[in-house]
Image 1 (cartoon, helix red, strand yellow):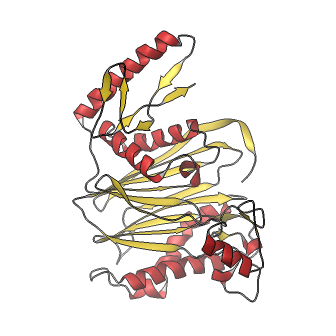
Image 2 (cartoon, rainbow, N blue to C red):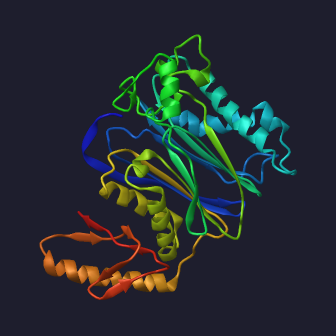
Image 3 (cartoon, rainbow, N blue to C red):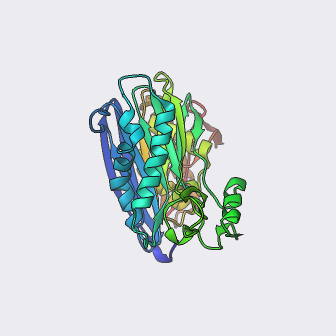
Length: 350
């Protein structure tokens, strides 16, 4: 939501860390929006007794940044304080039922405890990584993917007003879906905050026009093949399909040693692909994440040189920064670039 700037703000906020056998990086950019309303959180080690668990989250605010910022600082506590999480014993086999109920109730409690006159709202997508499981939860249209064996194994599902389950709830609560928005205004059908859409006294919190209830997905870890978890706001997903971004990130990890650089390139590529929103991406490297491949680096250098020669020759009047857009296979002037069937090329005019 909100107006646009005359030119995008491209400065990035970057954070990196590691713990519990994981590495992570976060990068965010205001982009074309007048304000930066995204927020994020990364905790590689949670308080006892969950010290072997890690937690990550991306929150996309609208109508202000207050709720997204509160999500980043308070949502985890709301989950850990639930009766269900208090009953969990992290040293025993994961109780999926308790975990799901705890996360859902944590979201509902967090939402209930926000000021009733709060005008802003936020999506939320979070990930817990335990020694044995990966847990993803989302509320709204920020999205998480889990990549295993070079494929998108799991992707959370966006909550949009035009989805049949969502639209039925909106209609039942007395609302309408107009131009794919709740009452013609809000582009998501689930969020935290947004109390303007939660005013039907006779209906429970999860039955309102806009619901704070997350979907929760639990997958058993396979350390030998789990590669990455990626969380991002819709500023990224507006211009990337799940599988395309999976391919892109796996390729960049073969060429770049820094997770932060990979995240930074995702933002730059999203901007040049036409994203007009705030952009945030959080990348978690799991046990089987790709590492730098000298052959991939060599082929990319050959590609850059070939592209540079071609473009400088044809468009010498332009100052071109040539990098990274993903295609599965390309043959350029006899130069075939194929790194595990992954290939990156972008033309970025600056």
